Image (cartoon, rainbow, N blue to C red):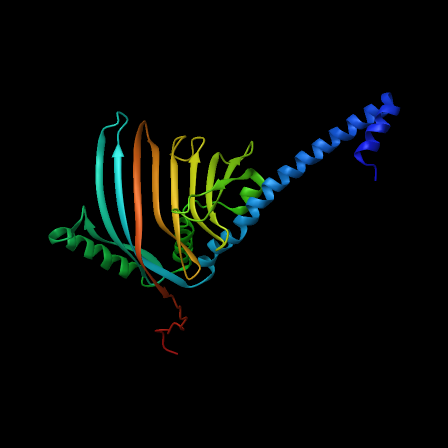
Length: 283
């Protein structure tokens, strides 16, 4: 192996041709080092995210469900910035059979009563009647709702192939002992930027923020979404979310700020029994 002093001696002795060779060697070294550093930057964040993302898949593979309270605060603004709506609703999120259902309990901090309570009771009774027998379409729907409840709804495969991922720091201890990972889209990819707070010791995503960098569906560029997670029996659940989005509705834009606070999680298991259908026809 040629040491540094020998390398300089060779370069002095063979000034012309060797200088060119060394320049090429250094250029190749710089390129390979840059590629290696980029690979390290990409692989380490993904290595932290992978086990955490695997936990997100668990609710789709198990019959364990959670009921909870959902406190929603919704504020709307028109194009001139005038507030057009400001309402708080408290829901008890339960299940009818295998299908998730949100039962309204309070509006603006006041329990339902009178006609409003009767209307909500009728809505619940109708839901029980309509969902008493779940077909395949209903099961697909509940699966879709579970996926949506994860919030960011981003796949690890997309992050590995369509994003540049980098560790940008650590969160303050009062928030969580987390590594902060930022993901920026590569050209041609989905125009969203992500920020993940990952507890590497517990292998959990504690928070996900993302921002739209282009118009998406009915939401304008600059709309932001934030989801915080808690873990119960190693199952990640959204505990708090804030959506701050500008939505294009026909020819008008509405600025919507919606906050959800989830609490009082209660776990139960869903069981399904398949029984034969008795025929009414006489044999």
